Image: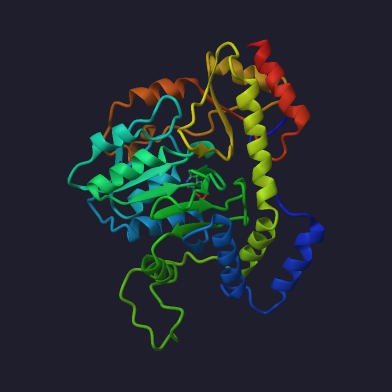
Amino acid sequence: MLPLVKTSIPSREILMPLLEEVLYSGYVAQGDTVDEFERKFENYIGGGYTLSLNSGTAALHIALILAGVKEGDEVITTALTAEPTNVAIKMVGAKVRWADVDYETGNISAESVEKAINPRTKAIIVVDYAGIPVDVKRVQEISEKYNIPVIEDAAHALGAKYKGKKTGNHFPFTVYSFQAIKHLTTIDGGALQILDKDLYEKGKIIRWFGLDKKLTRMDNNIQIQGYKYHMNNVNATIGIAQLAQIENLVHRYIDNGKFFDEHLKGVKAVELINYYPDTEPSYWLYTLKVDNRARFIQMMAENGVMASELHKRNDLHDYLNDFPAELPNLDLFYRKMVHIPCGWWVTDTDREKIVALIKKGW
Ligand SMILES: Cc1ncc(COP(=O)(O)O)c(C=O)c1O
């Protein structure tokens, strides 16, 4: 079965000597290798400061703290995402306020965000779902108009662009996950890309118990709540090896995604995503809307291709559903939405077969 997601690891020849070196170096904790990974990741993103972490969820948590979200506050977010996006809101004791999605993309609707804003709103989380960039321009306008910080959850969207610049450059906080099946994996890991230098320095303290690593333990005097969220030299070594090939890897997702965009256009019972102006997806998954989804998934499986809706809409989790809301566009989108494989493991032959299957009907 052609899987929907797959882990990419550099070859043995490249990775094993590097791992052997770090494992027996006598220093596997957070050290120079982590710094090297961060500087290389900054270089890849092309702006901001990289706070490397041990998960994307840790990145969401620190972003919410740095955005000033506290117990009892509200965060506006989308229900179409993986659970960690919204579980993190509860980690700071805040409440989850849903905005609807745009039917054309499945991403959070700027119009709906604006309607949901109230005096308790302290942050907005937007998700580049499945690698499709959000409506950056409109979300930025709303953020400025109401002076509310935006956290971009780009866990699915490494290398996606707006106006030619990668995710990580458009909002004060951008979250990445380096978990097993993402574009770039460090086995587990994550990063928070921060535009403001002072907030970045504060983030470093939060990620390590509230301690300042620049001072000795004895000279430290903890002032804020911190956590054990840092990356270590072993994961960073894998990250550095991944970064050396990341442009090529992401390019393959994009090439497959563009192929589907072109060849599935106008196909009966299929609706394609209508991307926002000036955005370029990085197609972590390829998302489309189909009639009779259950039969579509079955037909693809019978032909050796995995297709799935993958995520449960988060408002169906009682714990996350603080303010039950009507989400009519999400209702329509979610009924038809399905993902098909689009990553580096999808060969030219695979993608042609997928297009032929869909054109044949189900
Ligand atoms: C949209 C989204 N946000 C956040 C996360 C959390 O990342 P992690 O698993 O690295 O904590 C994930 C992945 O699991 C995700 O898919």
